[in-house]
Image (cartoon, rainbow, N blue to C red; front, side):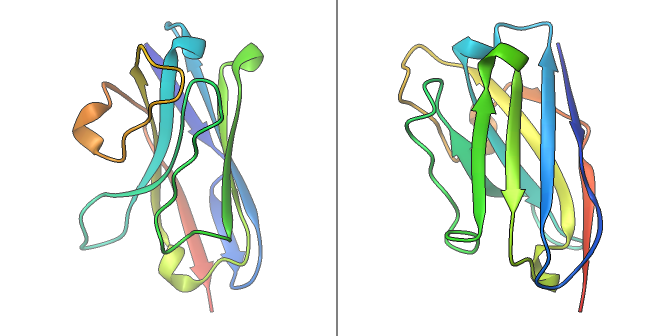
Length: 126
């Protein structure tokens, strides 16, 4: 199983980035997926999640209204559209996936996710 995240980089405050995560070696349509992030000196935190069906998309309060998570099961890919970014969004972003039975279930807890990508770094300059 491999999750390959990409799309990170340097962006100015107020700008946008789109992260992608391509999954292989698993049945992606049978998985809930999520993005987490870890800023320097801080613990990893939940950013956004998406259920198998795409109909359930919880967000962290800090990104609600600015970030959008989506998925394309045909491409085994989950996306994170980041708009109106601030320096507080600077972090390494990790995608994660978990086999789930329910089409509407997604957890915000990192221990619920079995599969993890390597991370992509996002730096927001002020």
